[in-house]
Length: 234
Image (cartoon, rainbow, N blue to C red; front, side, top):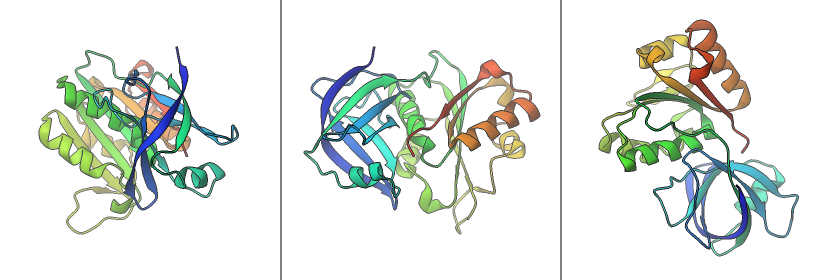
């Protein structure tokens, strides 16, 4: 059952040129499942509230973290003006975009800021050493748009069952990636055992729908093996 509480901004971390993470200190230890989301209301104005995926893992016990792409919206502007020590109101947890345990093989298809719940799930799997075999295919415009790059690089080094494949519209010398968009060919190449995996899709709604159509229509992945999250935090 979701609860509504006040939280304090503990720390703000810039992830790239237009994405920030906000770590929230709660009165008690956070209680949620990796991949869930919350509602964040900026204190003093009930109009300024939005659903945001939780980007931290339940194994990171001292805070809840949300990560937001900052746009020209009123909510983004107000969020960007927050400082450490400011108070906000949250209601959480919500959502079923969570990892089945035990789960032997999964794949994530994501784009842009849709990576936030996937970071939570992967961090949880790595910290708990679940043994789940994970492939992440992550699409962005360019290297500078990648969110949590350092985190995923570190997870890949410490957890041998995690593979990350980047798909970019604009490449950069020396950076390993596929140029273009995620399509059936990319999925076949990066996830040759795709019929053995459960797929989790998270990103802009149009991308999620396109990925679902590719998986079910072109690759023959059954509907019960596809979990979606139309990310609401833009």
